Amino acid sequence: MKNRILTSLVAFSLITNLYGAEHKSSAQIMKEALAQMEALVAKKTTDSKAMPNDVNSTFTLGKYGTFKFEKANENVYIMHGPVVGPNKENQGFMNNPAVIGAKNGLIVIDPGGNYNVGKKVLAEIEKISDKPIVAVFNTHKHGDHWFANKAIVEKYPNVDIYAHPNMIKVSKEGEAEVWYGILSRTTGNLDGTKEFAFPTKTLVDGQQIEIDGQKFVIQHPHDAHTDTDLVIAHMNSMTLFLGDNLMKGRLGSFDESSSIFGNIELLENIKKETNFKLYVPGHGLSGEKDKTIDPFLNYLKVLAEEGKKAYEEDLESYEIKDEVIKKLPWMNDWDAFKKNMPAHLNKVMIELGEQELANEESEE
Ligand SMILES: [Zn+2]
Image (cartoon, rainbow, N blue to C red):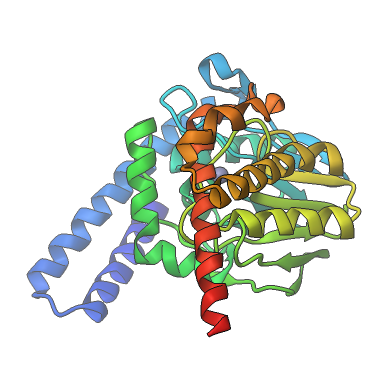
């Protein structure tokens, strides 16, 4: 009975939404609303069947092993995901979801890469606390970090989801679709992820926010990993969440909104000016400052240095890549190192070209 009332309410709101949004025939509106209702009801039935088993089952991903939240700092729990790219065996789980325990509820950072992973992350969260999730942070636009919002919103429809305005804008304008394509192809595990659960609230550079007694200070490094990133400082525990501005054990990709020189500057400033107890990368193990930051920072610095030399000698990045690999012995066991490094080196040289152009223009 309760379900039926709920379903009619959902149907009513769908009809009003559809009616308000576009000019469609009323038959068309009814048809669409009914199709969406049926999908909702079908999902409800499978959910309730799956529930009892889910509670005690472990989150296991083939050769990558078992995953759970572990206490990393005062009231901070992190589930370090497999340090590899998206694939069938990791089902698209590859990032570091974090949970912060507050007085009345929980705050989640980057819940994961799809709806199904989100359900498993939720089940793991429920093993460490029965408090409700009151807020979510998304560190940047890449779907492997935020598509699992969908599972959280399903359970907590009123949850606040925070991200930088650029993240929300570009995700809605097509970036989410691009990531859906990438992750769908590589993992085949995107069922239920649409319609996307986009962030609902914005945070900008320098903003301070208190949620349920937990204080956060936000930095937006507008040209490091991407132009959509948040670096989140949790002040109660002195934990710094760097998102993909910091990686450990694997490399990601830079795009036209990224800057390798900006990323170097950001990490150098963080090293110089901060003293947190714990530093959390977007991928790979968290830890103390230098041990966690140096491998990636030194990697980027070698690329910048070698790229500069090649640029001045008019060499192409592919001509120097074998020499550069020799200068990065600590990177050899990083996932996708040899595959992604040449692209990063090329990115350095593109940035050098842009810098030269900008200098010439400012001299004119
Ligand atoms: Zn990532």
